[in-house]
Length: 165
Image 1 (cartoon, rainbow, N blue to C red):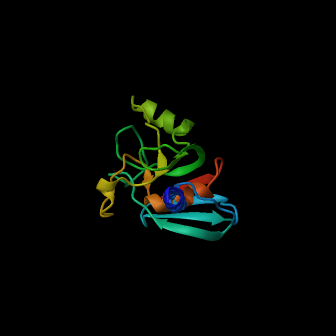
Image 2 (spheres, rainbow, N blue to C red):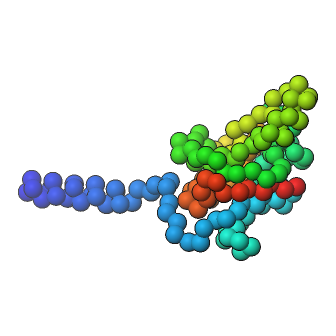
Image 3 (cartoon, rainbow, N blue to C red):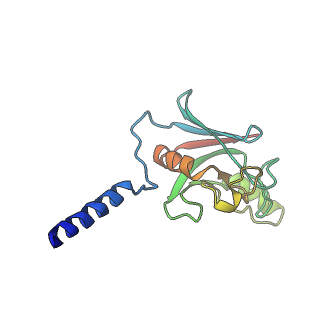
């Protein structure tokens, strides 16, 4: 009887372990060759050549119109950058970094006597912003956590990203 109880407990644990989900997904489809963000449309596209593999609705900086000029302006940058880092332990679920600021961004901000800011990422969305009704980031590009899991698995460091009006 005791062995049967132990066996039942082990089977229950195995079932629970099999049901747990990981935020790390695998992807074996065509490579993402470019990420495009259209700010006015609030859309992010993952491309393979000219083919759209996936598209997502996004939220941007809390003052999204125009190019990010200085730290704290609440704008999402515009221009051509690279995906340059990954954060599997992000406070926003998962995140991938954008190479903002580049040398031109730095020069423009310094001409104003300011910092250009930095730490621009594509990332997930914390619970308090899950209503999806407003732009809220400090300049980043936000998607749902589930979408971020997909993006994180598909986009590699070194992938070009074009952020447009």
